[in-house]
Length: 100
Image 1 (cartoon, rainbow, N blue to C red):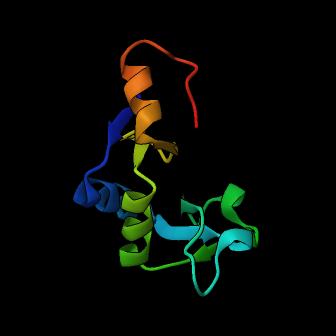
Image 2 (cartoon, rainbow, N blue to C red; image 1 turned 90 degrees about the vertical axis):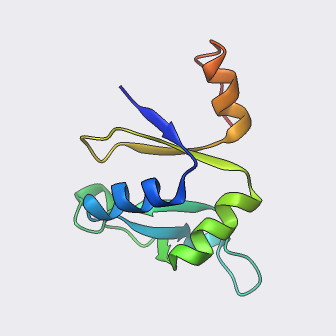
């Protein structure tokens, strides 16, 4: 079962424990904007493409807070999904198909 968090330490420890790194979607990342953030897993086959650019955790969390995001993650696997906090609130109230 997936868990949700906005806690920076929890996110960083979970990601790094799985080999994950903070990243931005390359086509949205520029000098004036971090863009869309993701957690990439460089050792995973599905992460071997040029669509992501590694960024610092400071950049990641600044954008994470600015965009009011949350992380859905599976503690025992590499499953994760970054969602809006408003989406998380809707899911907590039974709207299972809510997404942003």
